[in-house]
Length: 351
Image (cartoon, rainbow, N blue to C red; front, side, top):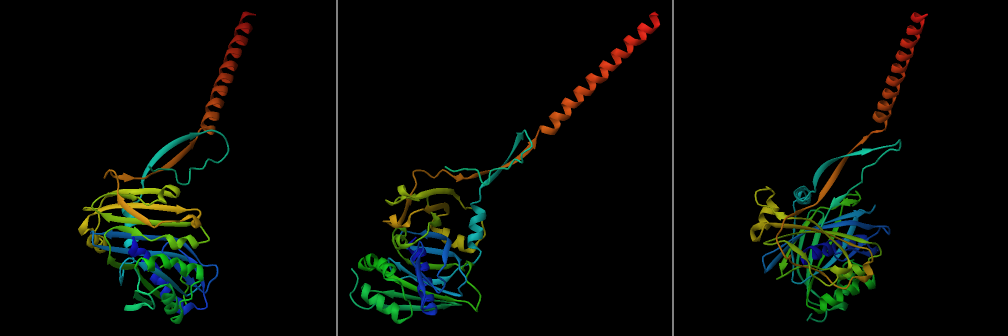
């Protein structure tokens, strides 16, 4: 989880020099910088896997912006290695964790148009001073720089000198991580004049970690609600175990093993240490109340789970019922006419 967060931060940071002067905002992973003051993160997705010593995070941001460059700064618990990722991995994950669709027939009455529910489902010690540049890689339009050591003042100075101008309240969010000895990844992304609107190309971060954690505390500076989708791969089903979990909307979307269900090379590679996939969606209405990072641990059981979405087929009984009533009335009227006709004939003959 930390890697994913780190990658996102790095991405935004790297883009910052290209957007200065820019507007800094916050996403789940860190501070996002863009020349577009209306930029917002529509949603974030991350795939997190770990073997107890190394954590891998594949992350993707979905932006709502007209800007053609952006930057993100993300702290990681240890220096991160940044590489590209398969652009189709999250489409594969979405297909693997899709809800099961069940068709149901409902009978209605009346002339109003009946509409099916839109989505009814069942869910159950930093070194003081300037940081050291450990590495810098170019991944197409993305430049990622890994920084280690330094205090907040030193990191701020480095960022500012390299064009990453974060608002004080955003950069201050780095302080707790830097004090704990974390590293920082800075990333810069530009396009050839095309807006970054929509899902960005995913990126992979790898760093040393003995737990699955997704840094979230910098998101306390976000001004809009946050939605974060996290897939975890491991030996067991996972759940949020951090202290903020009880105060946020955390929903289990899917849980189950991947064995024999996918040919995706990224997923197959990451499942060497466990192929149990868990999908969790967290919705945070008031980001200012964020006090902890996401921390994932084993769930009480490994029972599979798949959401169910009902596809309702509505049949209106109004016309059939009225038709039946009309048929009965016509039949009754016809029979009455026949009886009356017979009586009239009998009387005529009797005369």
